Each structure stands twice: as C-alpha cells, then as structure tokens.
Length: 275
Image (cartoon, rainbow, N blue to C red; front, side):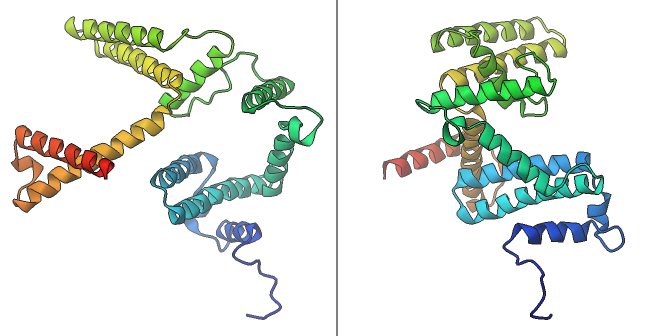
C-alpha cells in the first residue's frame, strides 16, 4: 500500500466509521451486516452494555477496553443505518450529546453555582424535564423510564421518581414491614391454590418491595444479585470439583452430600476473607 494513503489509523473513530461503511456497502458488504436494522441490532446493543458492566465487576482492564470497543461499535452501527436513511449521522450523534452535556451542566459551562453533587443531580433533572416538555413529551412523571429496562432496575427508577415528589415510605423499617405484608399475601395465595396469574402478581409485588428496600439501603439490586450469582456459581463449582475427585457428578450424589460441600465452600470463602 502506498505511503501516501489517507486510510484512517486504527486508533481513530474515523477508522471505525469507515469499517462500518465498508461492511454496509450494498455491493461488496457483509451479508449479515447488510441484513440488520435498528430492531435486530438493539438486543446486541443491550448485551454489549451488560458485558461492559460484567468486565467492570470483574475488574479486568483488558476486558473493559475490549467491551467498551464492542459497545462503541453498536453506536457506530446504529448511526450508519440512520445515515443510509438520511435520518442522522455519527457526527450528529456526537453533536447532540455534546450540546446536551453543556446544557445540563450550567454550573460548569454557564453562570450557575452548585453546592454539591445532590444539587447538580436536582438541576439535571429539572433541565431534563424542561427539555421533555419542549419536545412535546408526556407530562406524566414516570413516562420517560424505558419499558425495556431490566424490570428490577426499572422498579428502582420508578420508585425514585415518585419519591422525589414525596410518594415514598418514611424509612427502611416501613419498607421491611411492607415486605412482611407482601410475603404473607403470597403465602395466602399459595395456600389457597390460587391461579398461577395471581401467584405471579403477588410475587411481582414482593419483588417490587425488595427493589424499594434496595433503594432505601442505597444498594444497586442488579449489582447485588450479580454478586450473589457469582457466589452461587463459585460454590457450586466447588461441589462439582469435589465430586469429580471421587469420579462422580452432582447427578450421582445426594442432596445431603452437596449441601455439606456447599457449607465447605462457604468456610473456604470466610477463611480467604480473614487472610
């Protein structure tokens, strides 16, 4: 290749945009990429965001770098499809977020003052609400929380929004009392052999209160559950490894044996924490 080539370097956003344009070329592009549209790509975009979060949770810098690249690709992919339809370009996406960040930080780019992070968040929400009205959006408080958001996270968002206008439990104790109430209602439905829809409804109510409890405890329920999932996987792996030494599988053992190995894994974890 000529040394005078103007091909973008591989460490530039221009290179990624050029690669995507090549992949979407109607005549010589990739058949899979050409087949995609906004709706078909959306699940991959969500998946990549989760993979970024997973890499962060594991504290692996190399994986974080790679997963952020995958997520950036999703933005470029959507922007390319939009450009093909004369809707907007990647530059428009960048311009939009730059203008939004400047607009929502008047204490940095304007003449306003901010006492603390709480004041900044409050002003952000005020500006966001004003922007929504200017665009002719719904005046309802909860309408701008995406329905496609993970249900547990969305529950916290809904509750947080309602809490800002005073619709909230006074404290954690009241939430715990509500938790007991919802648990009793679920047990009652199970005892009476209710229709599965009723059981699902009561279970949903119970999860909603758990989300509220997480918010009051200032705990991210998704992060907490991810940690517990990882802990469960680690302990179950210990069970499998211990049984494998005896050339057996979990299917070839008893619940009592697996429970004993589970408790052994817990003791090992506690010992590591003390080290």
